[in-house]
Length: 288
Image (cartoon, rainbow, N blue to C red; front, side, top):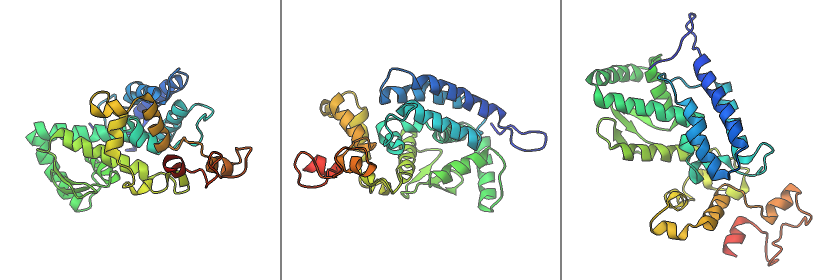
């Protein structure tokens, strides 16, 4: 379950980068598929990202291979000629689609944490290893083992390894890897992944201002509305409403203010052409 190493001791990325290259080829095919954004994202999660999850090692692809994969994923979602140049891929992956199953790092993080949970809960020997490596981690040792991937993942999520079998989230929630129900654990993993995506939205995106705080959007309600197919919520989330919500959250609404600032409108004024009572912003469209 470790890394591939060359004779020199350096990490060998040949296998993982090869899988990433295969995933890129699949993404290029998905880009040409006659599907909308949701359909393509589902194909990415089930056909392309799964290429990254084959094999038994926990090694993440090299930085270049990850960058190539992420670029290909964007092309597959928004089109090779960026038919939606203003789309925020961060919020799209955070809320509108199952981004935790698509990005290279999230696939790696999910595999690493799933392996840790599975091994801890079935093997006393692995529990002893966790206790040993936790002591080394607290002493500041460079683990140079699969536990190093575990540490990197929880730190990237903003979590802390506070006891041999205990993780503390950025929200100060404490999980015991031996006893915490799996569905509860994975819910908060996905919540942290969404937070990271939202925090990475550039502050220059005035149309998404504040979403980086992760408290301006009800992510639970939005996710239910977008993904639930049956029940009370589904009654109000028809195709039209779901499309509107996706457009709002992912920054695809071409307001007059944005068109004016980008020089993409024949009318250089940012004022709403329908009511002429103020600039046509997202808030203006929704509440005015």
